[in-house]
Image 1 (cartoon, rainbow, N blue to C red):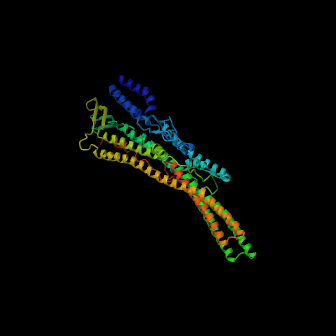
Image 2: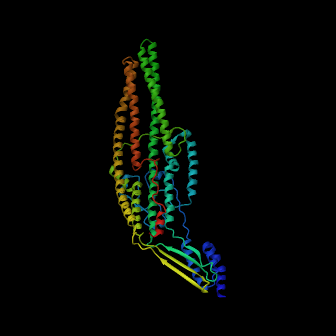
Image 3: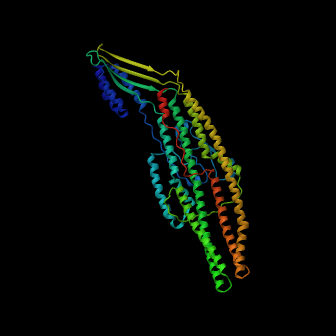
Length: 553
């Protein structure tokens, strides 16, 4: 009678609560009501309910999306944020980074606070990022409509690229994968429940058992799994930030290239008009019996050459435009005009301060350091693998042959005699050493690229100054004097053609020097990062650490 009351209380008292908590546990409790022993029902109920408590936790999927902060990224600042995931912070996954200021004179006033890569916060579902991508496409179309008349500016192209560039979205997807794997590797193993029947064909001696089995992961391996993936998340977030800066650098460089091509086209069109007037003037001199036929032919040859250069400049501009729009993520945008200046300051820079600033804030270097921390966490994780897992089993049932109830229990663990995970530990140690060397390699690579960018900047700056202060003024003065002397009959036509050619080529060379200066300045301002359409580094970890944890080997 007491057993029936207990079963009734179990069904009508626990089931409404449990059915909302763990449906599998509910079904097992219903199955247990076939047992007639109150103590057995109580024991199995307590065990199953505890297993439900241990295994029914639902991990909340965490997603993010890169926020477009054009002014912040363009100036090289990584904004401070307080929205740091508590679980990341508890596993030493938040990177300390000095705040970057746009003024190189304030390097001594850097503020060291806890930050995460710019634009990344734990937010809503991945659909938010997809919706924002569609919204970014609409905004890009609106920008294109607004620029039909006024032309694209550099700021507009940077904002569009941060929303539309596929490499940034690719890196964001890799970071999202790392988030998913981080949630998976910390999940506990599910309990195993079942029924066992023995001697069923022998009437009166049959035995019936209901059992529950649970593996307990020892050595804190699941938390260490999560610690490894936390560092992988940081590595992926820095990869996204690195790609954002790469894209911005490429947009600036492609913008200056297209702007230089546009300037060359304008020069060719202007000089074509001058050459056409030269042909007309030479023909007029022939009609006035003052010139010769070879002069007209020479003038026509120069005009044809200028027309060829104008067509080449137009083709170069179309190609530069396509490259620019491809990096910006809108490759179907038709060629238009660009609104900007090719001139860049030629003032000397404090290169030691620039190098220190880049080394202290480069997301490329921060990503290498995050991978080093990940390798260190993985080494600690592999050293814990040899700690065996504990397997528990509890069964209760009825022995009809003896007319009594029975309870069975079993506890087991593998003995780490032959396999102590020594191979994986050695591999993890080698990866730890490799990651430490990669940090040094990245530092040296940054310094090498900065040295080359500095050389290009200084050479280009000297060239630009030479053209602005010496060559172009003299070329203009020579052209004016030669044309005046030719009209007065003091110069022959061949000398005038040579002067015109010199003037035209000097202007083209000046544009090339300006372009080289602008490209090197953009590379320095972008932490010597480039490759906005290169494939990004994918996450190197998956949920295999959890599988390794559950094997106990």
